[in-house]
Length: 456
Figure 1 (cartoon, rainbow, N blue to C red):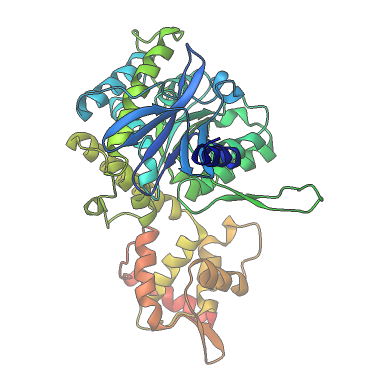
Figure 2: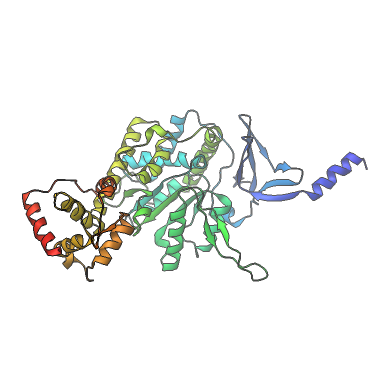
């Protein structure tokens, strides 16, 4: 045998194959797995030099070769994960967006604003890996309000949608998300048990920013515990009946309330079988959109709104960065400001806000330039003591001031006080909790003398 041919044969024998769904290489090459349902075949669509081609596999090196998942894979064959079949021309971005919105409008009844946002969110999912943070979409409503229809319809257009609804257990989700890195479509109501709900919350809490995988313990052959990190970063569309208790998690969602109005007359009660073919046709266009735009999309820093919470900017700005329509962009910016007002209003109901109001009122008088923990506690007992089941003590109030409000205290004449150096922090806390930094009036000043005398 010719030595050169023999050498090639030996390299092929030594070459290791790695199953993959997609890859973005350092030289700009993009690989995306495509699946043809009619032929039951899979391959790679490879994007190089502004051109694409089909490949049965892709050589990373003489010893490494990427191959697509088998078309017989249960996740693909049973449509748990949907893929395009080949890139298709879509014309302009405006035409593509119009196709997406028309598809959503045909089968789903939501507000026009959310319909436009959902259309842009579909486009966003196909380039999400260009960003470091992202928002989630959510439908909230009771049974029969159209949540599942939205998940099926919008989800079928997203980038590598992973349909978790009806999953028997939560465990496979971590492996699927880590392997496919797609869009999680999840009906939170399908996970009824507390341990499953807790696992879903882990995915949602860690999945909106890069670099926060979920660690799960696994036992290897020798029974040694070997924790593994599962990447869960990616777009997510969620349907819930109520709110999440964690306010930080709530702030990650762009939410639509559904089921409050009668269903539009032109909405089909049952999805026609043709919708799957329509969705595949649009996914093929979106694949070419990904090829052309993945390396061109980035955060538009000029869209950061300094008047709202940094967390909300992290969530909204990535989606705003791909929206070109001024009306839709303005609607989303208004929504972000409304969420900010709601967050401030919710904080205003907290114990921390009640303590801040007392500190503000004490500082409004020249007689309490450095309010003590003892004074604050005395005021708190008179104003809010009956609202709490436990005894209000100076130790409890002091702990909240130091740990939750993160205000420093110092000892002065045998008591702990809030020093004047903390006033800049207080100004920010007033803003955060929606407390007006008003000056105390005559009535408040008189009350201040009474409470100060009591505290002393």
